Image (spheres, rainbow, N blue to C red):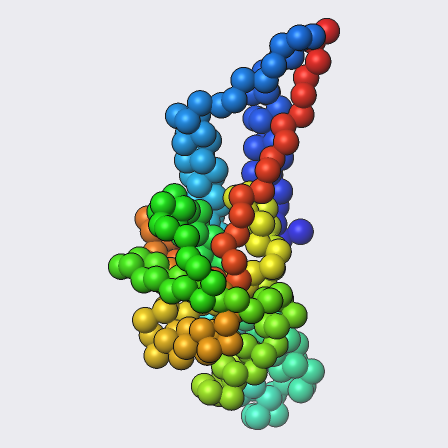
Length: 258
């Protein structure tokens, strides 16, 4: 289990334990009291704070992995030079090359997870602003200083992601930078249903972002584009393809009176 996965597992367990402890005792004939608005706000703030703390730990881990990658890169270059001089066997170079490749994978995975987390934090933090906006008719489009929305009428599913990827590769000659395809551990932690959505790490005002948004509108595919990062997230700007992620209902365990 990776350090990041372990952190997420720990936070999920801690959150479940806190929810269990805070559940009101129920006696026959009593009814569950709904949390007050202030309690909900505090609960949401706690979730965000824990995820930001997890992100900070992941950023430190990335720095360590970057340092290790640099060290292994230098070692690979050193062994390759020794091999060319006939001083070591080729197998020694291959071992260094394999170690470097593994280190690069760790760095890339760290960066991907950080980007995914930043985008999820942005969506979670801006959720209230999004809910305050008027609904859009089918085919409707709206734009503010922070959000761009399009309520496309196409029957979107993750199975359609391939045609979006194909368009992007043919247009820009590189892979579509998908940061989250469907549900992720971060979305679970935030209580978002992201099963039928994908996030793309492109700023909506960039050339590539504008081209992608134009393609989505022509295809009738719904999206929400976030222009700005939020405090605690370095690169939260992204394009969310699909309908808005609804909040998952979390059922707290009931505690029966003894």
